[in-house]
Image (cartoon, rainbow over all chains, first blue to last red; front, side):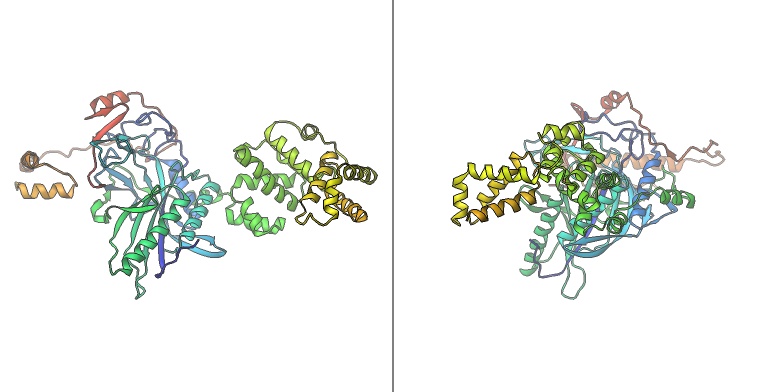
Amino acid sequence: MAVVSKRPIVIGLEVHIQLNTDTKLFCSCSTDYIGHTPNSNTCPICLAVPGTLPLLNDCAVELGSRMGLGLHGEIQRYSNFHRKNYFYPDLAKAYQITQYGLTISDGGYLDIESEGKPRRVRIHHLHLEEDAGKLVHPTADGRLTGAAYSLVDYNRGGVPLSEIVSEPDMSSPAEARDYVIRLRQLARYLDVSDGEMESGSLRVDANISLTNPDGSLGTRVEIKNMNSLKSLERALEYEISRQNKVLDSGGRIIQETRLWDDAEEVTRSMRNKETASDYRYYPEMDLAPIVITDDQIEAFKRSMPELPWEKRERFEKSFGLAYEEIAILTERKELARYYEDTVEAGAPPARAANWVRMEVLRALNELGQDITDCKVKPSALAELVKKVESKEISSTIGKEVLDVLARENITLEDAIKRTGASVGRITSESLDALIDKILGGNPDVVDTIKSGQDKKGGKLKFLQGLIMKESKGQADPREASETLAKKLEGLC
Amino acid sequence: MKMTVDREVTLRMARAAQLRIEPDQVDYMMNSINDILDFCALVGDLDCAGTPDFSWKMKKLPDRRPDIAHDWSDRDEFKSSAPAIDGDFFRVPKINAEE
């Protein structure tokens, strides 16, 4: 349900995306840290041992540039790093190396669609920075309050991030959610990041304010600690409601950072928001500036894959699919590839779209699998769709065959045999005889239908199901329904 | 020119650094800062006239590196030199600012 606000809502997002590199931003430690022993992915550089020097990961520059290009940003020929100082031991250096002022990509936009309406969200910039380590508070509930000290794991410290800062162009929690969904999709299409919010590969901080009566921007509040799209929406909805209540009662909004408490579904004040001067930014003299040549930018552009909106447009033109179908099929490029391979293998585009959207995704969902794990080869799916289309097998049996193929690495023919069906249609004469037999064997059901008591059609469906079962799926469902209806009519 | 800090400035610095110091620690911190300032003054007073620049020529090193992981094997050495260790974690003072 959309949140109601008396005052116009203004939302800007800062999205941190963990880049798909093998090593950290400034040292050769592995970025594969999840589940590893604390501090096992560390070295003198990310532990800030005096005398060590950072050295920039070339791959991070390329991935950041690709993301910037995907966002229609201007890749900067010259950018540099700064030190952002703060008093928090999640980075051993006591400062974070980040870009400030001169960033790797400037400007740009991302077009989204939210609640049926198109919207363009402008991008302020994209910059590179290192991630911080993880603090653990040795208390029963894992919270800081009550802790005598903290523990720190620097495995994540130094992992490369790209921070994408939007302009305050969103005006509802739903728009903020849809912006993040589109951003994540872009990152995945570009192989820049896996974009998993649950594992922390994609993190969102939101800045939200309510517009003053004179039209000027109200005081903004930053919200952190939202670990899912649902959390993002709920946190923004809560904050809109809280700020409206404060203003209605004559109070004023304080510029601050608030943490979202997912369990209690409230935001809590964390600290007064630092300003840039608190961070005492100054240039990182241990790193050379990032210089990107025109040739390199051209090479990045040439290596860009087909982007989501380009794919959607092509699917519409080439396959004539509806918007909703295209949206699902192009959500992930792996699924789009799977669909295209199925069509290339001979399946009619519209039918293939139905089967992939409805049946393949259902089967994968039931098995808890991803499309990349799918055992049903596109060529097998294409053959199956063609057999159903030509009525060699019924759609009911086709779905059963698909389920078998999804579970086991066997051929289409073996899967059809496994379901007990044989390829080919039952003749009209055999269908007639089969229906007579079923009607004769179920006089109570027939009486109920004849007396007009089967108002919801449950008994009729029961008979239709029996026909499909007894014919082992060889009956054409439409022909079976029509024949059954005629015979029942004759009995009335 | 020699600089010094008094108790008031020391407390202000601690606040700016978000450090909580107990009353009996203020003099210790003030004296430590003044020791550092004394050393800076000593360095500043040195007569460096005629001393050659401390620089040397070295070939230009690359400013980026390939994305290839290396495992660092001497982590125990760092752990042993850390102020406090708790299992595999480094132990650090609790943060006051978040409360």
